[in-house]
Image (cartoon, rainbow, N blue to C red; front, side):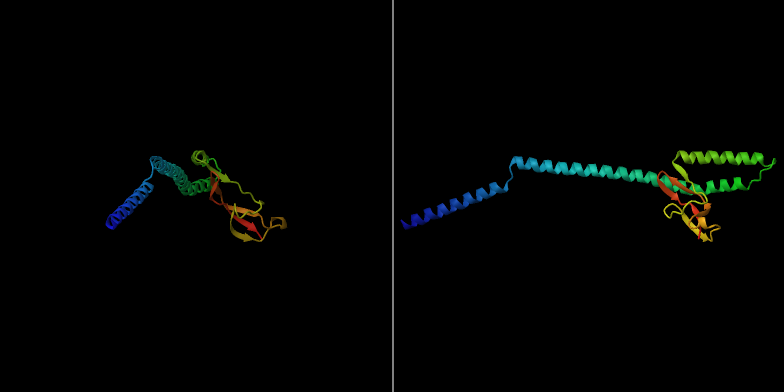
Length: 176
């Protein structure tokens, strides 16, 4: 009888262990709703990541176009300066009038094309207050009059903006 009691007790312990194991496996296996929710979460995260990728690449593309235009404009500015120098040095006489008109016409067409692409000239006049954020000081000279101290005396090279960004600062001489 004792043996039967021991066998029954061992069977009961084994049945309890099996029930506990079955309960544990039930707890480890997620339900269908939990699986669906996990997949929805994965999908939403992936979708958000893709949207961020699209925004980032479109911003990078726009920046690339802006910088490409900026590099081109910056490389064309010396040509604009050369045209202006040529116009200043061609003598105003009847013999050179046709040459002057031709150079002026080419200069205007070229400059108008650059303006259509967003290039604007930064206006600097003698007597303007020097602003380090807008001007590049090349040198300081003694001011001819007291009221020109700390102000622009001469502009050596014109400055230009492309949209809102300054691509070349005007180079100025300031009074000391």
